[in-house]
Amino acid sequence: MSYSDAELVMATQLAYLDFDGNSYDSMNAGELVDSILQQYGTYDSSTGTWTVKDGVSAAAGKQFDYAQQILTLSEENNVDSWRNWTIVDSCNNETTSGYYACLIDTGDGSAIVGCRGSESYDLEQKINDWVQADFGRLNNELTDQQADATEYMEYLYQKYGDDYDTFCITGHSLGGSLAMHSAITAPEGMQDKIDQVVSYDGPGFSDEYLDAHADQIDRVKDKMTHYEYSLVGSLLLQPDGTNNVVIQAHDDPNYDGLSAQLNRHSVTNIEFDENGNVIEGERTPLMENVREISLTLELFPTAVSTALTEIIYSTPVLFYIAKTVSELKQELDEVVTEIKAKISSLYDSFISLVVSGEYEIHASEIGSMADDLEAVRTDMQQIEDQIDAIRKNLPYDSVSAIYYKNCLRVIGVAMSLDCLKAKAIAHAAETAVSKYNQSDRKVSTCF
Image (tube, rainbow, N blue to C red; front, side, top):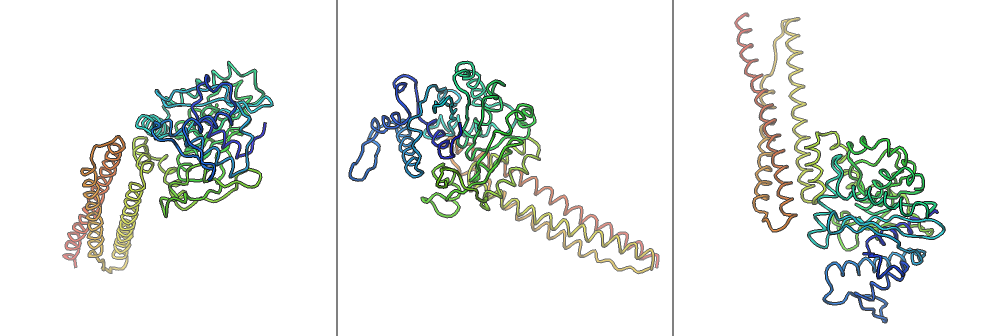
């Protein structure tokens, strides 16, 4: 069965509803959403809006928000087919790995597996989704959520494989990445029945993961689509053969400048055409920069790549610190290039001395280059000290604070190593000038 992009987005959002298979098992998706709104919210008929009731728990409040978001997406994009769909099964490992997915019967012998993305309404969800599941994809070791996804696909195939002609798998953000993993590691019989795999702005995978699953990817590669519209979707590598499409999305209207771009990751920012399908677009400069950095990091040794990717993943402030380090490295490279050019010039002058007897080499310029290099090193040392001061002043009041302190420590270590390299190069240049001067004096005694 073919679904519009807007319909699949609705499926990604239905995956955020806590379906327990008991109290809701007689309801279709529309009735389930209505029930959640009525249970946790109050309706104002004069404005046509819902507001959450006082005193509801954080988890219940998020369920209300998800239900309200589903209604808003439905109304804004004129799609209501989802209301007649039925959630027939779910895997709820929220209290262990954080994994959640559900099987949605859409009629006509077709079903959608909706994979839930990252949540952050409490500390447990932040650890399960953002730390273990998101950052865990930086190497080839399966995360707990990926292992659960593989097991759930095996379960679905055994229990429902004969009930449906086709399956679609979809998800947003972490859910999009899990949707792809689910298809890649599904039983071969299940893979034969999968006709669509759609990731909405989900981050990719490590190079090691793609190599390890190359044969499995080859079986489903023509069925996978990745829609990219924020910096999250620009991270890491998408599987070979994936139809990667950059689509139009608007910045979050509740923010300005960089913050607006950083918060465009929600599915509510996707722009659809009159038929409920996405519209092709272009990467923003921020997306392009993050994408290039992310791809470059895959060439680094694993430990360095993991640390630096986590830094860029964590916060805009650290991203721009990393950017500053990058600019300093570029300046350092330019100075080194000049030194190399001067050394080459010295060599050419030496050849000229041998051939024509002319002897005019300006060693002072090499010394000047060494001084410039030392100035760059001093600037880098100051930034390193500032980063260390920020790290020391950041209190241990949350898991995220501990994580950021560790990220800042990694940056500080990298800066320290670069300072040592700059010092070593400057010392080498000074040594070269000293040895040249000694040779100059020896040559002078010959004339």
